[in-house]
Image 1 (cartoon, rainbow, N blue to C red):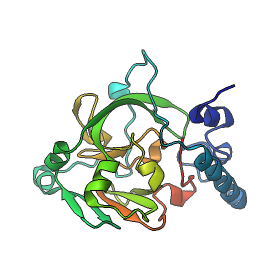
Image 2: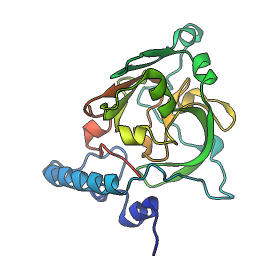
Image 3: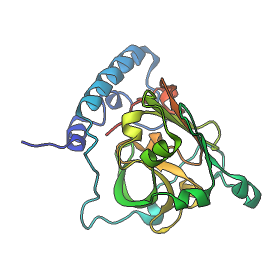
Length: 237
């Protein structure tokens, strides 16, 4: 019997740790922390073992895009929105272990290599939604910034409070990892992370940082908003 990696994880549960806490705001009982840590380590080793850079997500034929029903989420009290002045001054910085640091306006991003993909978005709670995302492949930004091959991790930072999440470089440089500026054929709305967000079907939703300000290539992981609160750091599919 042949199973792709998402079927494998779906049949086995999103993760071992997900069996212990399934809700997005659950941190699990304190007495289970050692078990949670062990489950996360084992789950990550399995996910890394079956991760394939050539494995591509595709929404099923006929699957409806979620459109305005696509859930929006943020940690600020209200939707983070840049006013006209802040929007004009906004730049996406690409730095850390790079030879050519970048500071890109939204217009700059739109002039770079463009990719549009109709893919699934997977939430840790178990639901899946379909959307069409347009943006710049992160691997193109990595090449433009001349990222150091020794940078094994990438951190995505935002202006949504102190929200950030770090990824392994393999997932960040997957062909379907995009810095998104449009959704369903229109400019990315504020509720979904404007002016730019990271999105990839190889990671669970909470790893896909919205309201981007900085992308940092690093030698080691530095956690993240939810992963520091007990969520699985790898968060892969």
